[in-house]
Length: 528
Ligand code: GLC
Image 1 (cartoon, rainbow, N blue to C red):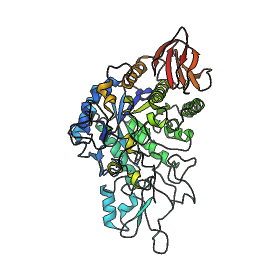
Image 2: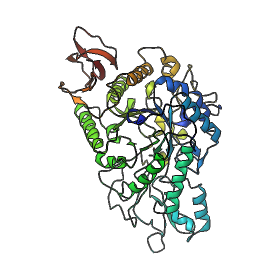
Image 3: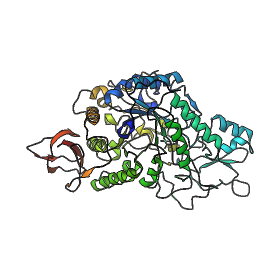
Image 4: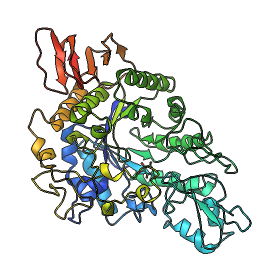
């Protein structure tokens, strides 16, 4: 059963889509409790339509004790009351489709919440419970089983095992409240195919697959090895990440997605050692896209950017998957701050990204030029990694501060009841209201760029860039269809012959006849 779609059915819509990540806690608060929710999202969908994005990815809104901001799911088919109800979710999907926006929901298959019904039963029934086989329960090492079963560490810091009162240990690659599923168990596989269908039947256009590289663990759960440094992005295959067996799961999901009309897609959050290994998730019978974390991790350096772009495009071509580009998300320092060059560099980085062939992911608030909030008091922080041994240096709350929409004082139109993380006192100039209509604002830059992406034949589609000769520190390429993108990654102006008319620039330019100085940290789109 497939509900009516108002979005134009289009094959391959995702190949050059701009997909905007909504982090529900922090997007808009509809009921005034200081926490973003589905009603808030629904009321702001016209804003996203006007921004010019093609699809919206919603981070988890499922029933959850919120030990990891909703990435600890207690019920995959229910909405957490703090976000609303199932009819609210259906209304978001329906309204989005009515506005021509597609909806991608987050799927968290590596682990659930310790409050999930299966895990609660597994604990209650004790050792020998068949429910324990759906997770990774083991006896400990040492004389009395007092040592964890192996040496794996949690990505949030500390051991990846927690001992329960009856003496057994269970595996959690993330927080102890997030037990890992055992994907060798057929009930786990069946359950997730059913969850996919549940949301597809409600009309979603796709899934963002959380920790897609982590589901299958090496047989026997071998030690990762003494002295190994656990990193999200390692340079080797770890016994719990990027195991070859994971691909069977995605093949079985693809058959489910393909049962539905209208190109339903899945995008993998897959941290792998190389882009070539990421491409393996995107073979024609597996998933559609993967986040390009290699690009996200690239410094603001001309040679490094060129190399990352080439490597990414080269890796995806053999599997015919679109390359994706991403600069910010809810797990990393916002790119305005991370790239180290302030707002001008962030704007230049965005225009570079949006000129590349393939699909681009935006994170809410980057269109406002929001910086990372780096001075949150410890007592307001909620990120579990902050509390566990600084596994990710406790940095994830600073990119999750609620959006400023309007007005001069916090919560800047986010809602009527404050905001769950405090917003800086100087965000009045960054609100949607303050930036709307100001041609120099970052919001209007994004609006113009996204509108050009929809209309200009050289933007978006394709799989190639043609590199052009450029002075040191400058990246320049042509896209078929007559567009040249030139990026000055240095701090100093560079004199250039303009290859054509300026279509869009990340900074106000002062062009003279055919030859002008490209300011530092600036990207220009030229039309030949
Ligand atoms: C992914 C999510 C992150 C979450 C983790 C565990 O990396 O993006 O926010 O903490 O998975 O689910």
